[in-house]
Amino acid sequence: MKAARNPARRSLVKPAAAVGLAAVLLLGPVGCTSPGPPQPPQPTEEAAAVASGTPAPITIDEGRLRQTFEGLAEDLLTPGAVMLLRTPERQLEFTYGNRSRDDSDPVGLQDHVRIGSITKTWTGTVILQLVEEGRLKLDDPVSKFRDDVPNGEKITIEQLLNMRSGLYNYSESYELNLALDETPERVWTPEELVAIALPLPVYFPPGEGFHYSNTNTVLLGLIAEDLEDKPLEQIIQERILDPLGMDDSAFPPSETTALAGPHPQGYMFMDNVLTIASTKLPADLIAAAEAGELEPNDVTDASSSWCWAAGQGTSTAGDLAVWGKALAEGGVLGEEMQKIRMDSLRPADPDNPDSAQYGLAIAKFGELYGHTGELPGFNSFMGYDPGNDLTMVVWTNLAPAADGRDPATSIARALIGEIYGGP
Image (tube, rainbow, N blue to C red; front, side, top):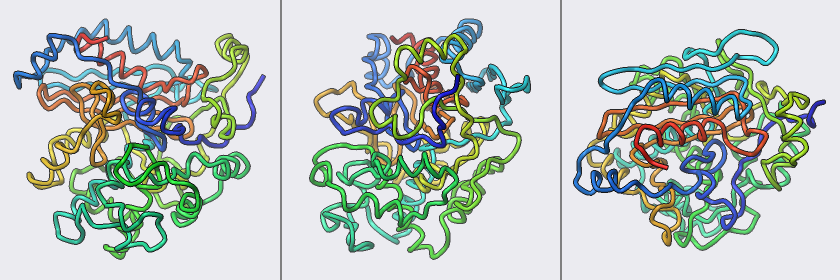
């Protein structure tokens, strides 16, 4: 029994009231998707530590962490999963399962995976570097660079970075999702993606809400290309990957988004149009998947060009650990700009201080700064805790799970709870 052919996954971003940051940022998707479920309240001990400026207390029980990792990976039906945890005292490397459902070749830390919306942190960092260089300003209106953007004279570069522009997310459109199902190999241009979004209604006036939108980041990528007069893949290579020695990472050209080897196959149960209503399979199909009677589709080779600046990147666990630390510590930004970035984080829901936080192309998960990502068949989490010099990376080669959860972010959330003593 096989689910409908599933060429590619849509963004999980639903209308703001339904999902917004709440189902994306902390530990919900942030791939070419959205930022995640609300951040749980901090335990009293941790809250006191944060208030005092001291690092939050952590406990690393290798056996318990491994049990949690493997148990959730199995429960989520992931063919393969990887976890990398680094502290000054130790490094833990957990792997589960195989690169393919059809063989016994185990996954490994050297495997290349699609990182989805973690790519947004690359694009956003490029923009902040250009701000540092005086090439543009955070308060520049988008109309300075594009005359076709609704409310462009009122939308700032900063609002594109922090997802407060109100622009429609093209990834939510029926037009895109149907096309992804029918022609998964199609190569999309950034202008085609923008052309889907701009005629559709805005979610709110600029600055008056939060809605995770790939349209924002694609526009930033186009602006960067105009200012640099070179393709985005070259800009990211020269400004991010080369300086940090991230030799196993890439922003592949849209025409050839194939994964470098070695890599796992990526799997998904649903097709894109179906996920518009829900990423969760009906109860009978969940039962069939759990019984091994429903097989997910192999979507490894679907083009990722539909995410472009918002999610086309590829990487490995080791490189993501390098980038997560640099992102939080300002490895490729000056001290002043890094402070601006870190100070930009605020709850997606201003009425709920415990909701997930998002800023200038960076998210915050409890004590960890980073991002999550999701693309057809791949889910990833990357976070760094400066207080404890702790780095965590998790990826899976299934997205979403049969029950609608995002596997890597669900595993990361559980591991964070084990380490910090949270819920």
